[in-house]
Amino acid sequence: MEIDLISDTVTRPTKGMIDAMMQAKVGDDVFKSDPTVKILQEKTARLFGMEDALFFPSGTMANQAAIKLHTQPGDKLFCDKWAHVYNYEGGGVAFNSGVSCKLIDGNRGMFTANQLQLAAAGRADIHVPYSRLVCIENTTNKGGGACWDFEELKKIKQVCVDNNLGYHLDGARLFNALVTKNETPNQYGALFDTISICLSKGLGAPVGSILLGKKEHITKALRIRKLFGGAMRQIGYMAAAGIYALDNHIERLADDHSKAKTIESLLKTLSYVKKVEPVETNIIIFYVKDSLNSDDFISRMADKNILLTPMGDGKIRIVTHLDFTEEMLDKLLVEFSSFQF
Ligand SMILES: Cc1ncc(COP(=O)(O)O)c(C=O)c1O
Image (cartoon, rainbow, N blue to C red; front, side, top):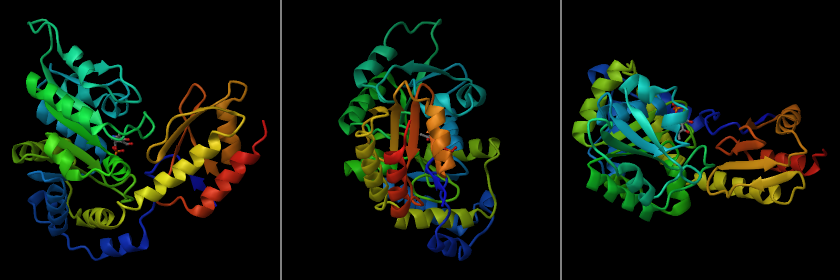
């Protein structure tokens, strides 16, 4: 039994999901004639109370399209120093949009409205790039699945309005935050100009992300998606997986969170663990003591078929997901407890 906790993207479609995919009615989505894609887009737009939605092959492409539609080359955006759009999208902000990032020194991937206000203040003359966009990530990936305080997000919105900045949410794991904090998609839809959500992370679909926004944003996004090479043909098979995921896999995220909490509780008692970051959703980040090499720990766990991610400086990441069963959790608890160093 392999226990793959590298990411929540490692899941395989369930039987129900495969059945839904096999029964999907499809057409050529580049000609806007795939009925299942239309259903998925309408369903998500309705769910978030936003005007329109567009299906993308990946979260990266949805974020990059959002950045492109809000900006012009030479502009700058504001994001946390740990943001996915800055760190893990291959430099796409610069490559695709010719935009620079002003990084904010936040906490676990999250900054405050005051920090944004300070970053946005200052001279606005010909030497300085135009400020155009703020990107938020909820939950934060590098921040260990941390969830933003919604009141702070509202204050940040006010700074955006005051400074004429677009407001984009990278919601690759937004549903994890909604489930944990008992929030609704509508709250987020009313606050942000554009939102990307991933169907292929905690929700368990094999592929797909959605970009949500006003009609004018999504009209631009459609052209940008084509430009990026992301316009797809009989993609209703994948949209069907997304519809199934939205109907069946949101509430169950609470199981992933509860398993993550169980692992957190154990880690806190282990002599070889130095620190565990607070666990709010499905990501656990912990540090082993300096006397234990984290790569050794990871490779000895790999020998037991437990796969973890090294994050440098003694930091290790675990991500729980749909395919991580109770039996696997029990085995992990036993192996962690009995580990000798
Ligand atoms: C916060 C965040 N945003 C965006 C992405 C990009 O998603 P994809 O891998 O579908 O391009 C990821 C992927 O891990 C992510 O964690």
